[in-house]
Length: 341
Image (cartoon, rainbow, N blue to C red; front, side):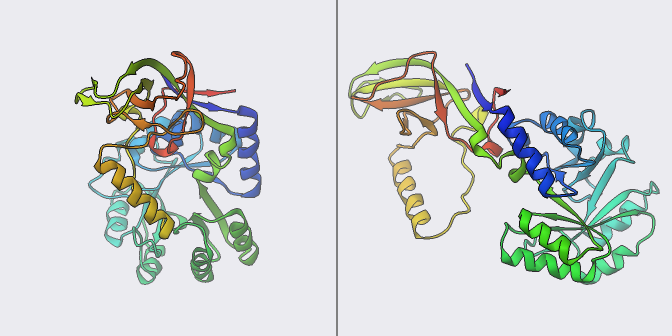
């Protein structure tokens, strides 16, 4: 049984090369579940691209990439004195810490190891970072090796470009690490500020930017005809009508059925959310699996490694052992296998 990510290798590699060519100074981001590919696989691919630096999300992710990528490793989560940074200590010369508070910069400098540091500026994201006054003072701090300033921006848009422009207006003679700027925005910034070295940190657009190269499929494990009113499953629900119970690979251990809050807004998005909420209230939830172009309902909440689906009468169930499509969120899904052609 398996939930598999299939990758059209030639097409995917062409996309990776094009992103690297369009964004000089590219810093591939490999964090979390590795965007579905796994951190180890992304580390090797970053080296294949010729990147000199890779970014990870946390200190705990360093071991997964350090043996497969020989360059520098930027940790995106800001350094804190209470974090376990032991994975970074053995690789001190390769690790670039992110710092966003004056007290943390002072504590890190006091370690006496002359750590490499990127100073994060507080953006309109309001997540981490120095305000303008503290940043000016931090840049002159001793006991650390300055590697530039960072700006973690909202999703691409005119406001993000303007915000980056304001930063560069004051710091256009340093290395600037930026997130969430399009290729065109990065090019425009580089042209407007030739003294700055811009390092675009890119994750989703790099690894998942060509969705046509990626497909997810799951294996059909079993199929059982069921009559209206018959009981089934852990909770012994009654079938609302006659049809087929289909058992497929993929459950909560893979991230199936676990949904993150959506960032979409607008009347249509709110209407869709209300409709889903109405279905949830009566125990009817649309699954991410696709059969004949439609996404059947879960027959009951997903199990750990399998899901039970309900196909109404008139639907033609797929053969046991065959594969069907699944539409999943890559950053929230753990695949059993990743097959790259």
